[in-house]
Length: 455
Image 1 (cartoon, one colour):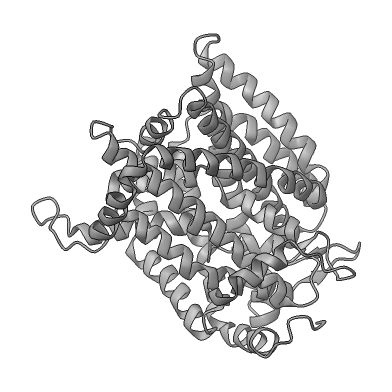
Image 2 (cartoon, one colour):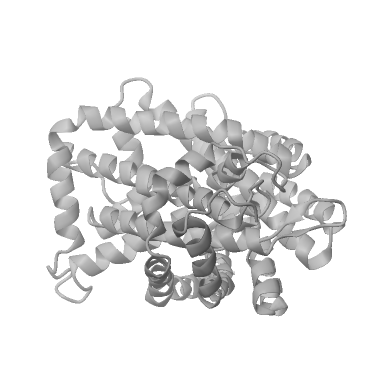
């Protein structure tokens, strides 16, 4: 088992190394340029996200689709992951993380457009779509769409389920350590969490979307308010933190005696990787739920989808990075070796409520991720084996919520990372090869002023 864990760790490091980072970031930049910088329409996109397209075909509202995708992307990566990037890559990693969000908006936009354009209606009136449909209908590569679904269904068990359940149980065991045995706490959390998840996902996409619509704005608002409070406390260090972030992001100073590269290389490596992993732009997960949105044409939903990357990375990850960096400057003795501890120490500066806010954020972010990824996994299974496979998949998914709450997840993390990378490759193929389709629709609906036109 130790040998197998070592092999999976090595594979994970390879697939998420520089080639994958260059491929993803390169796709972001390529689509940004080819689509004439759709980021310029950000405020229009935000307005559309809270506007209902009444009478349009779809299963859920545009905002509900956005909330569900945000539920899956806004997770522990925004809280612990950014701090980990800083602890490993230095403060300069914050800027590189932010830049992946800015350019990733174009990729998330393209994913949403293709999802709606190639979606289809099932025999019972439900709407399904995603990269698998774009690959099959747009490129005639059904086999590659099937591979994408296999990787998605497996990845949902890892990054979308067990690792999130484990994060919840670990935090609850820490909170309750003075009252209950940690193992008993994890066991109880597993039962309770599995019961709630089962109750929600059995209701299907509309029930999942309703929960995410209610949960996502609340959890994000409380977390951001906590970050703003910390920045108010550390306001004297904000200017210094921004200067440090920009300086280290482009510093050519050698690290480790010149053997580990420059500060710039290390900061870019961890900042870009964390940004890409956090916002999931290019991974192909978010378009699965975007396909179910009620929208009058593909570009309207594409704009709404693009705001997910803005909120996830450009806003939340950036604020987290600024909080962590100002805390490092304000408290020089704070430990920088562990991302989780770095975040906890930063929030501990808020009297009385700092730690509870962080704990609430981790628990709600993780729970929402479990819900969002359950839908992704279900749609992937339905594409592969039909509607009858959904019940079986849900049962396994619920059981794994309990298992994830009580097990060690080093191996699961590595496997999840590998599956996520394998998901991205077929999706990037569809984005690049169908970029001409995306560009034509963008020109017609967006730049030629036909955004209100029915498809």
